[in-house]
Image (tube, helix red, strand yellow):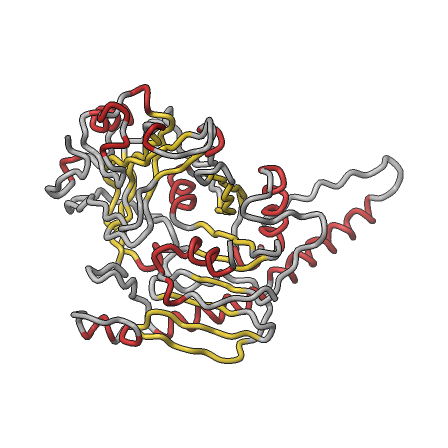
Length: 411
């Protein structure tokens, strides 16, 4: 996998036209133990030194999004406006993950089927439009995000380039969108490039960022234990940038048809409050990507709710109700019906259930029940023992608050 391929995989719908050709070039609680003899005054001095060091370290460390709305809401309200739950999928293949066992796809999703939630927040994506160009932030806001990001990385801004939608878009697109800023690229003193997109997403691309010896950072030859070690190191090194109070690192490795792993690396800010943790995990997370040499290629930071409007907390259905809808064909999925065993989803075919918020060019940030369904292995030319899990979604919001729509999976 080349560096350009890696960037395309990480970026997804951002598009190949914006991927350059690349060449290889917390809060922590200290526990101090003391001997019985002496040391009280010394302990006080050392504690003060530790506090001063921490204060100096974080004195200028601010979130890149410091002056924009942050994820979550302190003042909640009941949602009343009806929302559209329709999911729009891309045109390349279908959404599915391959593994030898569903346990290989375990994640630290803070939700689990035993939790009883009665409502969850919904947000309108202000950067969304029918033309697929995610733009909303002003030039001033994007420049400030870039400046704060550079400050967190302790690098200086050398020059800035602005790309408007009109610079690449062809077709019938309204002038208002054509004149909008799609992204701002900032070149920094150490040849790092910071890109801020119109929806608030940040990409940091390094010319050469070598990890110390002892770390194995790759897409297809890193074990889960090695991945955890790498992410613990990276989340600590870039703590000023992430600005998380309680960083939780994890990785996911699905497989190719031949069984080769493709590992991705993530970190999010785990909260003591369940709903906040669910929002952080699904929406306000960061992704790290290695290059061909095992160096750090890029970091992606997400905070889509900085360009969103809080609509309120909406009642949600139970996982049992959602499962019944799934088995009755009321779901959204890009999986062709021919791949479903016996043409219909059964309870036995459900390998895993999650509650998620989708964050890829959506009109509303809203919860869905996400089902991993084992597909008919005879439909694929896979390595022996490999399983293909198709992804199916059922809206979690009570249907009373949903606009009329047609499920993609209706039998």
